[in-house]
Amino acid sequence: MKFLQRLGKSLMLPVACLPVCGILMGIGYALCPSTMQGGEVTGILEIIGFFLVKAGGALIDNMSWLFAVGVAVGMSDDNDGTAGLAGLVSWLMMTKLLNPAVVATLTGVAVDAVDLSYSKIETQFIGILAGVIGALCYNKFKSTKLPDWLSFFSGKRCVAIITAVVSIIVAAVLFFVWPVVFGALVALGKGIMGLDAVGAGIYAFFNRLLIPFGLHHALNNVFWFDTIGIGDLSHFWAGDVMGQNGVTWSLGMYMAGFFPCMMFGIPGAALAMVHCAKSTKKKVAIGLVGSAALAAFVCGVTEPFEFAFMFLAPALYVVYALLYGIFTVITVALGFRAGFSFSAGLTDLVFSASLPAAAKTWLILPLGVAAFVVFYVVFRVMITKFDLKTPGREDDDVEEEMNVALANDDYTQIAQIILEGLGGASNVTSVDNCITRLRLEIKDQALVNEKKIKSAGVAGVIRPSKTAVQVIVGTKVQFVADEFKKLCK
Image (cartoon, rainbow, N blue to C red; front, side, top):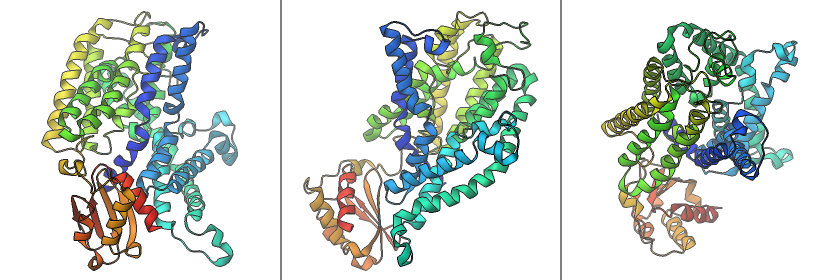
């Protein structure tokens, strides 16, 4: 659990980049529908819209890169950029080795005959896995000392090399495992095809449940495209209806259920998170989940919201996925039909409403109100009842710690006083910080002088173990930590 919580916190760095991308893409699609529907981009407004879509897509489409670097930096002992480089090395190594062209050469088959799973290897899961590998290799080998003739590669310089070797081994394992997992999900998709609205609900549940691993693409290929002869998305936007061009199902049923959840359910859940956030952290929560909710409503970009809590509160995320399944069953059963070419936001709803397969789109209002209320109530009850650590409720941000008044604003002097109180740089083995505290590993607790440390104006000193010391600095901890690290060097 501690590993998941640390992973969740490390994801906040790349996740913070995503809300603005969703907003840019939503505005861009509204100004330039040709970007979504095809056709020529003409006029100044459409050109601006096209530009905004591509600007937002630059990060959304490369989310796995962000996770590889951000997770590696966030999970490293001292948030060093070397770990970020190692995470990127791992991601590049694994995705290159499992690229369809490389797999084709290794297996001696044509590229178009390579298992479909390898074309879906650049997922968020691989990005997160690469970040974890990079961080673990950094933490383990950052202080490695090599013989004199290899001394150039000692310390942090050897981290990327070791990461590359580890990533080759992991890629070899994934070479055999990835197609099996991907194939199992495709088989699941085939198995629920004939279950009508219930099948659509099961699909929606697993679609959300697999988001953290990037494996939802396997199911999406089954239902949205022509992997096994369905192609709900492609037929919908081609203007087909049931009974035409091989369409034997109620067209749009594998997309419709996402609209009330993304447009209204996520804003309801986000409001619950804001209401449950600690008083001193409400602005932070609003900034993170509020902008994410707006992105979900406008253009259906949900990852900024989902990755903000899925690893901090995994049980809540499972319930979140279950709500998608339930609302999809209801939505499909009531006859609401809409489609998307990007995702289930307002923009796609407006543009798909005029297509032949669209039906009862007015139902988005009652369905949306119901989704907003249900998501809000479920999230608020679960967060408060089980004390879930959603944004703004993390253990580290105690109210008293947010209002610490340091002795002065000379962060170098503050860091110097704290270091002296810890027994000097020789007694410090590791330096890290959270939102309000310096987290330190030391050699000898007997050398720690709490009175000296507190003279810097800090709120307190905590000793959770024989080798750990935490100094409560307050919200300016990052500035003090930066100076502290310089002094330790």
